[in-house]
Image (cartoon, one colour):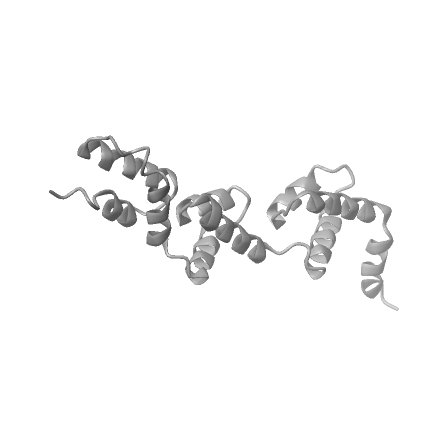
Length: 166
C-alpha cells in the first residue's frame, strides 16, 4: 500500500493533531469562530505545522463545526434584529475576523433585509434623544447616528432630511 493513502491515518493518530483538535473544540465550545480566526489561534500553538493545521480545519469543516457562510448569516441576522446595524458596519466587523467584504455584502443582499427599513427602525429607537434639537442639528445628529451604525450614504441622506422640510 502506498504511503500517500496511509498519510491521513497517520495524521489522525498523531498526538499533536489530537491536541490541536481538542484545542479547537474547546475554542468552538466558547463561541463560534471563523476559519481565519481558528487558523490564527492554531499558529500560536507549539505543536502547529501547516499540514496538521489544514487537517484540523478540514476535519472541523467536515463535521459541520466550522462554517464561515453560516457564521456570516448568523452575524448579519443578529446585527439586523438586535443591534440595528447596517451592512457596512457588519462587513467591517467580519472583515476583522477574516471574512472578505464582498462575501458579507452578497449574503446581506440575499438575506432579504431592507437597509432602509432597518435604518428607519434604528432612528425610531433614538427619536426621544433628538426630539428637542433644532432642525439643522437634528439633520446632523441623524446623519452621524446612521453613519456610525454602518448605513450607506443614500439611506443616510434620505432619512436624515425626512420630515425636515417646511
